[in-house]
Image (cartoon, rainbow, N blue to C red; front, side, top):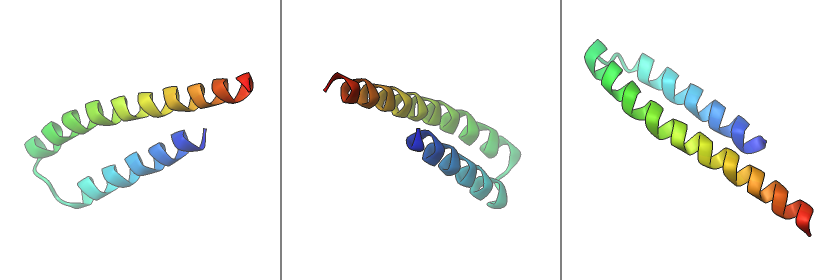
Length: 60
């Protein structure tokens, strides 16, 4: 589950960087929508990868 923690910290830092960047409201909203989709897929892949690694580790 350390992958999930790393992903969460990365998402938080990215959000802080975007907020501090002073982007306009429209740009911020559109960027956030795109990033949320990408980050959601990334988190799902990390969780699935962690579960597969755990399952394969038990099988040995």
